[in-house]
Structures are given as C-alpha cells and as structure tokens.
Length: 261
Image 1: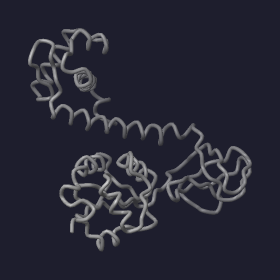
Image 2 (image 1 turned 135 degrees about the vertical axis):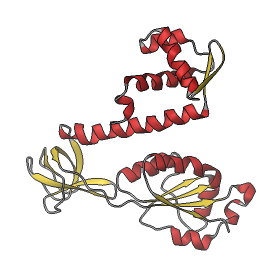
Image 3 (image 1 turned 90 degrees about the horizontal axis):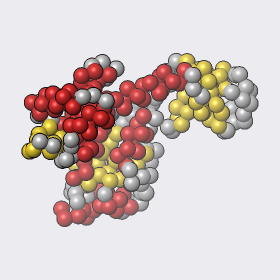
Image 4 (image 1 turned 30 degrees about the vertical axis):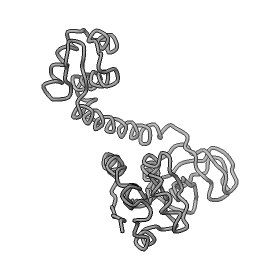
C-alpha cells in the first residue's frame, strides 16, 4: 500500500498540493479548506510545511505555486496510487469480477479452464495448463469471446523487452542522419512498434516498416507491457526524457540505442 494511504497527514498534504498546482497562482486557503473539508487554519499550517519542504512557494498572501520539486512529488505518488489502484482492480476485484477471454477451443458453461496471455490477449483453454484458472460462464465456440468467473491463481505474463532507438530532430539531421544498418537490426517484426516524432516515423518508412502507433505512443507502450507485449520504440531525442521517466515510474526495464549516424 502506498504510504499516502497509511498517513492521513501526508494524504492531506498531497491533496493540498494538488489543489495548489491545479489552481495556481491565485489560490485561496479558504477555497482549499472548503474543497477538502478542513479548516483554513489547518490549510495554513500544511502550506507552511509544504513551503519548508520546498514543494510550494508564495509571492503574496493568496499566491501559491507548486515548485518543480513539488510537481515531481505529486507525480511520484500519483503513479504509486495508480499502481495500488491497479493492484486492487486486478488482484482483488478480479476475484468477484467477470473477465473476458478468447476461447482456445469449444467450451461449455461451467467448465474449468486455464488462462494464459498470448499477444497481449487473454485465452481460456482446458489443454494449456497454467497457474491461473476460472470457470466459463456460457457455451462458446473456438475463437469467440467468453466470460470467465471465479478466477484463481496468477496469470503469468511473458518476459517483456522494451528496445528504444534514439534519432535526432530535423535541425540535427533528422531521418537523414540515422544509422539504418543498426535500425534494421533492432526492429523485429513480431514486436509492437511505436514512433514518437515525425523524424522517427520517416526513418521507419525508409526501411519499409509501418508503426503500430504514433499518437499516445508512450502510454501505448506501457499498456502493452502490462499485457506482456514487448515493444520497439523509435523516438526523437528530445522526447526521450519523458518516455524514460514514464517507464521507470512503472518499473519497466528498457535498453536504449543511439541511432545517429
């Protein structure tokens, strides 16, 4: 459990800092107090503590701003909260929820099946033995979607490998300054392929490969990893820091290659 849920004081500080960041610079203590259901005096004390920690600063009585350090603190614990929420949804709620799987064979209602991931999709089978089991809720033909209840065990995910290629922006050479021999070696046809930046898109097209995703690529790569799908990401250099930070926040390992010729 994230420590924000273990400490009421830290949880309140987090909420106040979020309010400051979302309404800055003109933030009234009374408005924060009304939103969170606490007294203005309490808000004042928390703001003093946040200021002492370097998370906020004020240039006037009602002018508060979140500092870079404060925004990083919000981000860190927001990701922590999301991971905890995912645990609740996937490990707790799943015990009473209906999961959707693809029937690997004809199945009858009430049949106990094994569950496994393949290509990012969940499959149900009586033959493919795994550590996760459940019961199908209806009769179904092979290849159709079916509800699975009474889930027990852990659905094992394949090992995920994220390979990232870095290419320069156009004013530093763009797609013309890419080591294409190395790029061809890194791209594998069976991987999920994402591009970030037009230069990266053109570089892939120059070797005859189309990307699976461009818009929302960072989130798509993370989502794919959660489903056991490995990815190759070709990104322009100035977008890399936010991508790497996103992967590191989720604990997803990656390897980085500089493809500038």
